[in-house]
View (tube, rainbow, N blue to C red):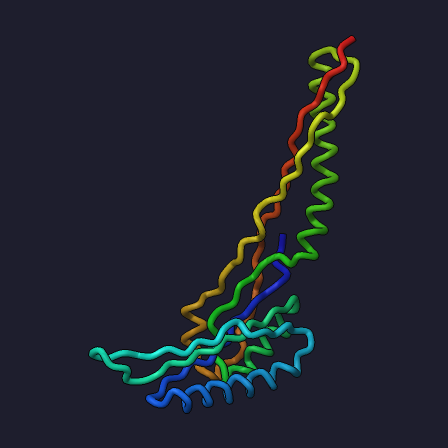
Length: 191
């Protein structure tokens, strides 16, 4: 199953000896990046976190580090790539992860349920025939879907080292496997 959703993490991280000053600088850069991202209505943009913490040297605070992260979600990888390139003068790319969207997962699982139920019924009928029973009745059935799609990370180290003026990355989502299991018990009707 082709991954059809990408989530990119953009961040601004700065340090300064003045906590208020560095916090204002991070907020200003995040606001600039966010205003540029508004030009991409296909994206879902949300704040992923804001951290401010001291940097210690020999038991005393020497400076403050502030980090703010934005998450960008999209199903159009070209739009996401362009948005990343547009925002990179103000925010760095921390990583990109690919997954199967909920909509595609649900549609695929619905199809798999139909296929698996047919296969279950065929096996139940084979068991009925093997025992010479005239029929069977399904007593219990359980449907289990696989784990939520694992997220495929994209070369974080390579992305983090990219300079602000770098062209937007080419994105390829890769694939994931979606599985479904139907199990149950049947009661045979003997002649």
